[in-house]
Length: 185
Image 1 (spheres, helix red, strand yellow):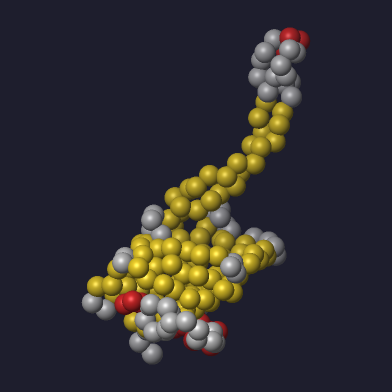
Image 2: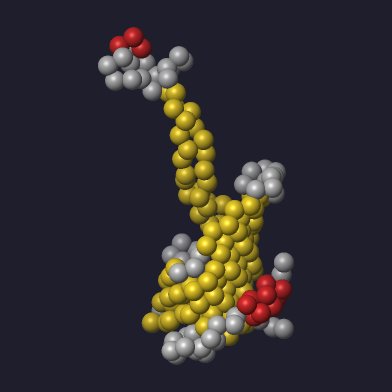
């Protein structure tokens, strides 16, 4: 799905009633981003660990074959090539709609696709923008199976560093910076 297609869906979902005027700063407009870059992705792995039981001298304290095992699921932030398509609409009154579609390899033959949709209000203070999400969700699916999971993103706040330079808008979450350009359509 191309950013302009996401933008059309985003514009259709931006039906928030205007309440108290929020300061949108230099963010007002229709913005798109598309690119691939390295990001940290939380990866889960299942590990079998052998252990000896305290006071069990029959094992001699060994941790080799024949020792009891424990299954451990660990999560590790792993640098991964992530492709993102994003569309962000910010109105002058601070109402926003932000749609993100990101994909990355889970293995050599499997890919993860995550779609986020968020609507709410944004307030800008200096170089920080706080997105108060009134309604939103995140849906994840994997190409190797039919499992899809969805989580509610409503009632959250997300704060980013923002910088406007000419016709570009840079938004950073602290580890990654995305460069947005005005939607031409």
